[in-house]
Image 1 (tube, rainbow, N blue to C red):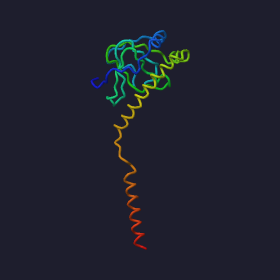
Image 2: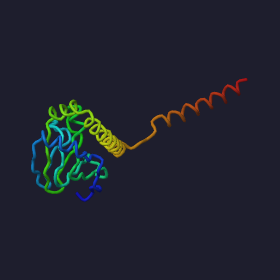
Image 3: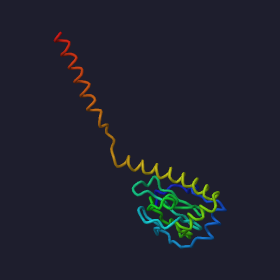
Image 4: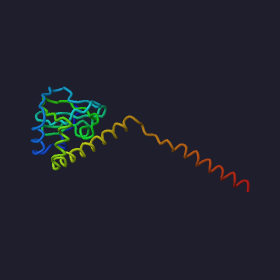
Length: 170
C-alpha cells in the first residue's frame, strides 16, 4: 500500500454518533491486509473504525487511496441507497470495526435527526471524493480527442471553396 494517501478526517464521526452506533453495532476484528468490503459487494451496513486504519480505494486509481483512522464511518453512500459498495476497504493495520446493519442504521437516522444531519454531511464529503476519483479514472481510461474538430474544419473549408466558386461564376 505504498501509494496510500495521508490519513483523512472527512468521515470522522462525532462522539454522539459513535456512542449511538456502539449501542447497536457488532464488533469485528480485521487483520492487516484483509478486505472489509470490495467494490460491487452487497451492502452489509456501515463500519465504524474503532481501532487501526482502513484504506478506501477506487480500483485502478491509487492516487485517490485514503487511509481512515479510528473514529471514521465507512460505507455511508451504499448504506443510505441500498446499493453495492463503490469502493474497496482494506485494513492497513490490525483493526477493530463496528458493523451496523443497514436496517438498524437507517432506523437510528429516522429516530435522531441531528445524527442524520451529521451522517449526511459525511456522506456529501464522501460522495465528492468518489466523484473526483471516478472522473480521474474515466480520464485515465479514455484519451480525449475532439471528435467534431476534424469535421468542423472540413465543413469550413468546403464553405470557403463554395464561396470561391460562386464568386468566379459571377
